[in-house]
Length: 380
Image 1 (cartoon, rainbow, N blue to C red):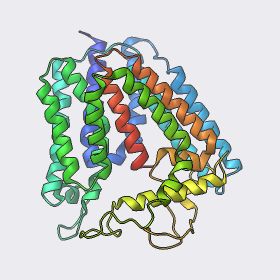
Image 2 (cartoon, rainbow, N blue to C red; image 1 turned 30 degrees about the vertical axis):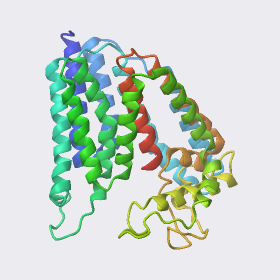
Image 3 (cartoon, rainbow, N blue to C red; image 1 turned 45 degrees about the vertical axis):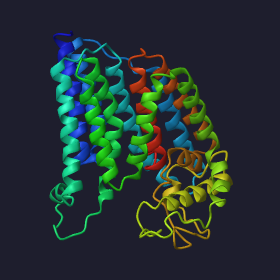
Image 4 (cartoon, one colour; image 1 turned 90 degrees about the vertical axis):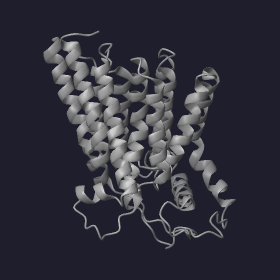
């Protein structure tokens, strides 16, 4: 058991993750600022408490520097160079803050007390309870926190960010609970609660994530070597090949309506074939400039004029491709895709080197991240 500064640093981490679990429900966008700020504070606190300066992980630093350099250079060929500099300016502090947080986390072996872990478990259940309140009481909490009228219609898709955030945060909490001897039923109850919230919401990203993560977690404990190789190979192939294989795959399903004969239509939010068509269009655009792409953030302002089937109008803009892989291909070309593939492979190999009792949780966290990053949001 750590005492003195070790105990203080454990408490600081607990405060950080507890805030993540709760703020993830109330204001999930806060973590664009919260992570770098807390990373800096924790880094400074470590220096004061231990009189030592944690070293920034070399691999993380190298990948971050290369990414910022490539992103900056894309201004030379970008269709909108001014957007490149805006994005680099906002990306640099996030990468730095995340690196500082990671450097502290890797600087020593933290041993969390049971009270620390119970605090995290309680915050996780509390956060999911707040999501459940919105789900089953007409988005009541969302209305209050956003100052909305109770007569105004508020769709359930507003919970997507919170549920996706929980998908990324649950595995660390579940591991700490099992590591400190807390009944496995607590972890099962936590994940079940998350699954129920996901499937009663309109968040198809969280639903997909819950299914894949549950299956992967249980299978990995029996077939760890096979699943690691499959995961590493599939992630690499997907990253390098997706924009080239998706358009012909999508073309083979054109005109097919999975909701024929139901009350749903392509006009509904979350219609999967809308997302599939978006991916096909971005892929075809990426193929036009395969080596260097169109420049960072170019996707946001480009107009796509191909004939649409599910998306409606023939001229349309997208905020982002809803896919980390496609966004890097479209904006940084093969160079960006290779950087991403290398970074993901390094992360997976690092997870594989962890003690076996940690690996199922670490690998499942990676699966959650990769799924959400490629179906829900843009990389930046």
